[in-house]
Image (cartoon, rainbow, N blue to C red; front, top):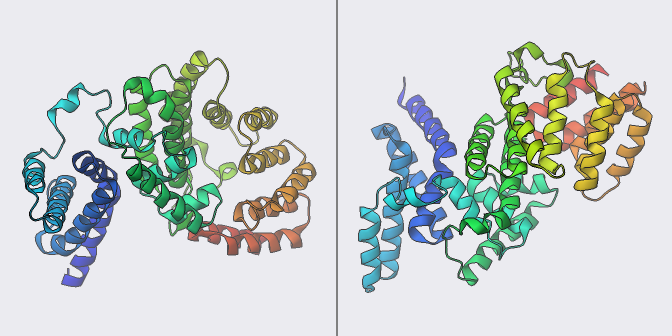
Length: 419
């Protein structure tokens, strides 16, 4: 292999390691340094050093520990340069150098032993408005870009960038310690933590941009954290509801791409390739959520929707009227234009595409969804169901222009060509 090819392979390995380890590195550094901005800056510096050194030295046996150690040393070096005459900085440097990579031994006595989940609870501090808590935590934990987070919230990326920046400033100005809250305080932060896991999973399940239709690593990490959270809070129905939803959605992964890597939509999937063990796990978690819940929450309801698909032997056997009724309940609980759009699809599948089209046309006029490829794509499909082929082709082509995901774009252009 040529040196250029070797460097390219190593760079890809560094980027893969970073996707896996970044959240933990930032979490460990924030715990050590007590400074979020310093932790992020030091972690990025470690990434740069990895890109420079690993092509020459090879990927270390424990790359996450390597990144954490280098980042710690970088943070200490920066602080020493800024405050050479302050003895406490030197003392801090000695303390950080001596601290084990996996964290202090006293973590064994703490209720949350997972560093990433721990940082989620810390970042979801009540001093921040809930949208800011979620946005900041998505940036830290999910590794999502500002643009990806903005797309999830249907707002401009500049707006989201300002929201994240203000959140950091608020935490700093309030002197919020980066310490784990008492277990009695978990409930006040749980809703934001669940929303972060949900949005990270969604970005992995259907990537909003880039060359890949899915980002399975994000889904696996969200699922892992969901399992840790369920063990930590076994009496919380929405924790089990979200875990059920993720298990049921992940059960379809093997069938969502064809051999060429092209997307396969739900009605066309080979259901024999669905992971039955994941379906069993998901339905078991859903049963737990139902037993614990006095009333159905949004994650329990979305898991119930996923279960309707999981138990249908064929696409035609799907109980669409039940799905519509679940969406009705979900809309009462959490009104959202995206839920309305998904309900419209269910209404069409239940046999009334004309009524669904009227809903979608109204949604397309709303500021939050105006120009969104999902609205255009659903509208195109409904027009095709109604036999309005030329309009459908034009709408599929319009949807292709609006999406930032290359696989989705190719799928929509293919639909436009088929008519």
